[in-house]
Image (tube, rainbow, N blue to C red; front, side, top):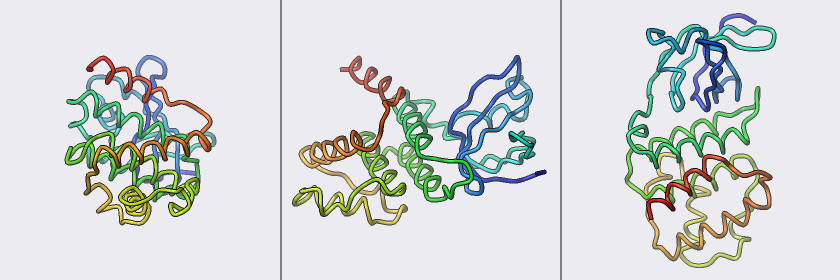
Length: 218
């Protein structure tokens, strides 16, 4: 117990009382943690911006018997670009909800944090389509957590098999550097959806909202 500095990304935020916030942070050092930010909802609070969803950086916390309390923040990236694009923002919320499903306290979540951070950078850059970023993130997350099979056993062929192999094995820095045809994307999405139904026992509220937004836009 005592003072601790963790590097992480804010996954979700909820109000507590009149001025406080409870945040869930995906960290390198402690896995997924919940922490209280006292007075963070006051307009002049130094904790206001850094306890918003998607904020990435260092969090100085005091570890109590049953919870953490944030004392200072050193934010490196707020991903404000996503706030300017409703669709991108909801993809971000979906990624956080998906990561939250797998992350655990005191688990080694360094790979999960690195993947999430790289995925948010891809959303911000907009160099490849959001739906493809989603599918890459879903598949790689399941791989990180040991819940995606050997891609060579899935019955895929040609460009679809090559895409699956690339997602499974390429370094994070090169993960979001390609595009695929509509045909390959449809095949990729079908394979990932089928496997998610086997290993994930819940629906994600943020994806339901995102699908609703996309339907309305059409």
